[in-house]
Length: 361
Image (cartoon, rainbow, N blue to C red; front, side, top):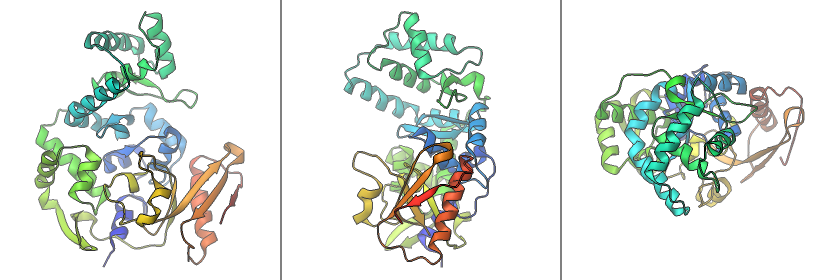
């Protein structure tokens, strides 16, 4: 019988990746948290058959995937074809949460001011222009808009919520914004129940086994909405008990192959952050080494479904060095081979072919 972690590793595309294309992978996952921009690309790359930074940059440039604020709300990658129906499903709650952040930060931005900025941003980015936040700030300042005290971040957040902007092609390694209507092809509107069902399918096919509480946490849906979503796909879900707790498993994910595997997961990776309860994959006494109470998630080492340590990297390009440390002594035959394979996968992702060093074993 497969364990909970066997199924999760397989569903997360961390055992035998099925996808070559970033957009297909992101669509399968529903959404992938994208907090730290550079390392968030690794969250996609590690789940592809052969992922590189360039492949993900190309997908962003083409609008096949986009990075935006959605769901809880926080930064996520979503497939371009999914963005609009996901926004329609979650935008009211996301907008409310972001408005509360703005007020808590001491900003007093009127609806008239937001409307004016939305119009200006639309004109600034018209013609498929991709500009960084700093470039947009300069343009708004020239137009007489108050841009002090990080107000531009709030203007752009609102423009995201209104479906005006989304991520564009990188510029000198920096993320940019561009007009959604010019960057991502339109798709038919989904009825609310259809969107709820689709979101539940995306979550459980890629995150099983998971509980209703996990789904509520990940999606940001209300309890009522989440229950409705799960009920809509109940014929595709199975119930299974692990450690005395009832989990839901997407039917097609129940049978998973077991395999020895070790990965260097990026900070804020879906394997940890997308669940309300994380003790099934990391002992409670080690939680503080993987994430803190303020919501920061650290780079961690995954071995056979369990979080067993931390890793970090220093340097760039020709001088990357990777450091590892483990919570407990890792009793693993051919340990060096597994660590080297994990390191090689990361180096190949960043197209780094120069032999580096690992310390802290």
